Image (tube, rainbow, N blue to C red; front, side):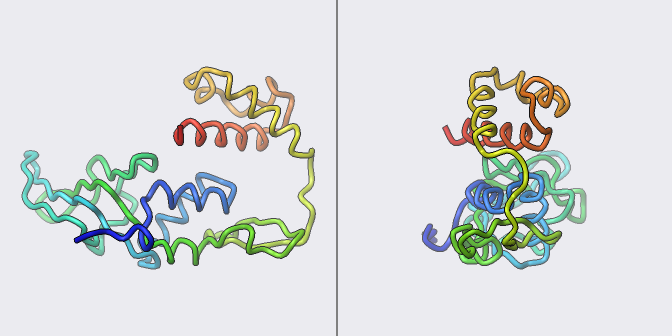
Length: 196
């Protein structure tokens, strides 16, 4: 079966899109997982292996939707590499699935998180508890984006391990900005490094 990438998108691309629309990586993680487990996003996996308790591959399926129980809290997803790793979903008999090349239906992703340009002019985007994008005509409070850009530029010069290991209060003190601004800038730098 040939995958038509006009209809499907890789998991990491879907995650980045949801992150951009929601403005929060953790919320994007939770929202995508929630909608997958509720079968509100069609998914397909390039290679899905069923492995027994001694590590032998029992079966392999290609370009197929995962089992109904696949998207639950026990699945370990690597959001940057489109892999489902670790023990994953436990099937009867102590077997588990391991997957690579996770794809989501493009139309489902864009239905749940429409692009920000679809919002009325002057409106800003926020997220409801279930991860849907909503709009508001309120002006976002706080400092202008110049501060955010300055922090992002400084962070991009830092060592990745040092930046990743900083606590929010340390970032706030170092960059003389709100913790939320620092965290948002760090996520933007981390995303840029993943993309490059």
